[in-house]
Length: 104
Ligand SMILES: [Zn+2]
Image (tube, rainbow, N blue to C red; front, side, top):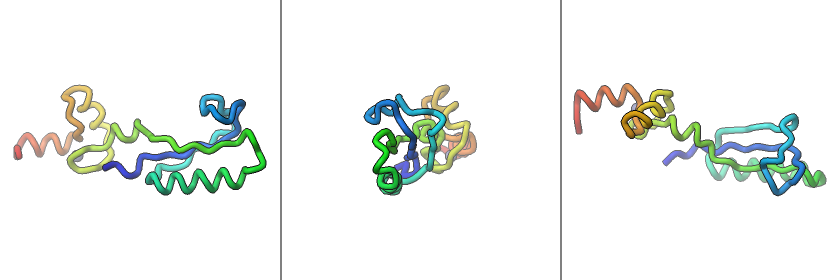
């Protein structure tokens, strides 16, 4: 439903099995991608740095982006997360207005 909410994070880690130990000075963020593109991209980053044990690339779902995508028009807008909190509808302001005037 939301195909473009995957981001890829790469960097060196104190513990390469724990994303939270990433060294922020080496951190690079790419995306957003679709899931398959993100996995592909992460794989290519890992292969490029295969001799660095502490380097990892992670595929992460970017929830902050997802919460701003309107379920009606599928566009990203800041008002969506506000309406979600206030009315529990995942809808942008312009869709909200058109829904109020023309209820389905
Ligand atoms: Zn909308």
